[in-house]
Image (cartoon, rainbow, N blue to C red; front, side):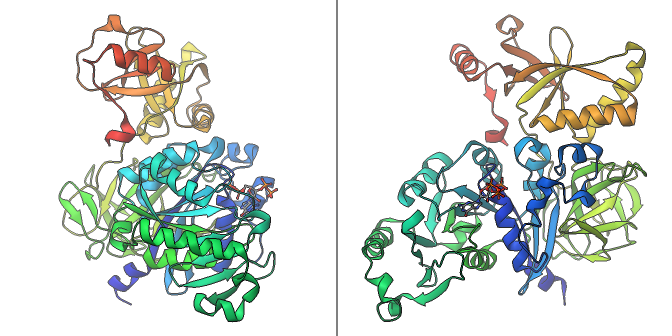
Length: 521
Ligand code: G4P
């Protein structure tokens, strides 16, 4: 098979959602379709600790969760599927955001009883900023949810993306009859825990008269007419640009509408796309191998103190043992230890293609965002965006005698991208910022185990971070509620105590331009 065929087969995506919307349940169904697991409950087992084999760090074991965004790869029909997990709950971290830079499409799950929730909004913004195609799965139709039209309106209003329902629910909760598939002009009948049955819509009257005559079905036909007339048109090109989200209604738990969703999704989801570098776009078909590191996981095996760098392959063919150049340092590195990810198991990978994610052994050489290339051309993939942290803590060494280790640890962990560093402008105190609580715990644990430095945190609570456009500030305008800090690049930022202080400051200091990273990137 040639490179182009391998690229076209690949569908690399992430599933984003607010906790409890059904991400684990849906992922599990997709793994079942891919024959990666044999029975339901295998993935959910991670909550009860069954996934011990992939618990890399001590801290993961303690909490029974997986710190890293793991990768699940499997063949499905003519495709090669790569699902990148985006951790939610307390393990939400910058890795979650960065993972979204390594995918070509995104599935957004919304709980139809709740609508668009906060974490979905945050993750959605990152996808939007990068123009990633977004497919929506409206979950839990077996429960009494909100009105479907209202849900679509919410997607358009809160997220600001147009939608196209690929199917439409007929009833809901106890009155749920099935879905009308607009795309394939068929009706999929909900049979509870039994397998679904499918009819062509023009054969409904004859083959499924009980449904056809049901007033709920007739009402739905009316709604569909409205959608056909007043709704958006389906336009694959706009889907690819991330301007229009196809919406699928279904129930992950009952495995209803999931297979049709997955098949249609794979048909329209983007294959590996050209990626931006400092030398212009690099096409995946370029013969020379290239890729970039979007995440580094340290101490996957505590006995060896090893680190694994997660590499997104962007062009050419990866072959184990090949020599590549690390663009940042111009050093040549031989990639002899490489792993693929098969739903939690790591196996040695010999060959991989654009769209694939591989883990390479990191002899402490890589940084997040690093580009690796084979061949003569030198270029670097676009820098990974900085993401706005939301939680802040002052940090200091418990033992002043150990300040050297403390400093070394902070420098390295910050450079690695494990956490963000700020300095308070007036006091020069060190402040760490994170997207989720777990980043602090991992940081503390690594400072102790890798740098032998015990640390002490003082929480500043959740804050809203905004960067200042410019390098001159009047210090008198700031206080503890609107705290002036500098980031690790020396750029001024303000940590606001809450939404109220932020708005008050903004409205009273119109001359200061405040930048929201998620909107400006
Ligand atoms: P998450 O990974 O997004 O956090 O969500 P997860 O799949 O764990 O699902 C959260 C809860 O919602 C689970 O119930 C799950 O069974 C339920 N759920 C997922 N999809 C559907 C659906 O289509 N319909 C209904 N009715 N429920 C759904 P739980 O009680 O928290 O966990 P469990 O004890 O059932 O495992």
